[in-house]
Length: 343
Image (cartoon, rainbow, N blue to C red; front, top):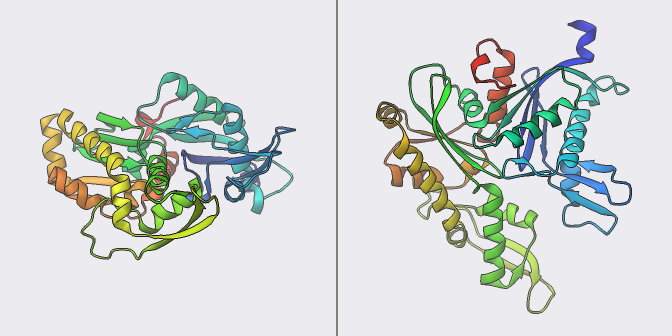
């Protein structure tokens, strides 16, 4: 396209509850937290992504941070549009700064359990970027494409995509979802579990960001780990004295904190296997379960699911990027994947 490639672009977007990723020309050009900071007086956006995350839970009365997505769908429509526009401006940093790009096609991935109203909200937000064509693709299908599965084959493939707001479980065959389960238990629920545990067990008040850091550092759902993480120092506020305090926490405590939410994911996986047609179930027995999304990085999750299902469990090479990579492949080969794209 030459000169016009400065202006006209096709992008693939993984609009996630926790993180938003954008692919352009087969490269991930944006990978930012799904959060914005706005001025309460003017309602103008001050920061988006990592810059806004740095402000989260540290603001004063004039600044508010907003997470526009909840449970995998848009909860705050105006904030979501501001966030998408802010992320898209990041595409311009190395191009012509004085022009916003025009989009021919945008593909956005959506949870499989989404309602028609929620679909419309995603479509409208993407359309307001000025894109000529807006398509949507279900997250489990995008994840399967992203990890190299040929979804058109008459072979059952089971994807468990644990994101920030939802866990999407789907059995895919012949470029469609044969059966699925969607539960609103995922990364954010794990953070809340850790936050609640610290308050109840240690009388320590911590914020969302600290809970997330604990989850990344020592988060686990299986006790018998080959390489257990070292104890982690948690900084927070003593609920009794009201002063800052530091305590040391080990991964076994976090296993207990996450048990209830992890059990809900176990149940959803078992339910999806239960409702899968027998021929597809036999394929899953051979091929196993594929874990994608940030939750796949929880230590011991593969062992836990294997112990419950007795099936092989595979963690994607880059679980956080599987969905957006698959969306990017669908964008590049639209004719081949036309059947899984929705308008």
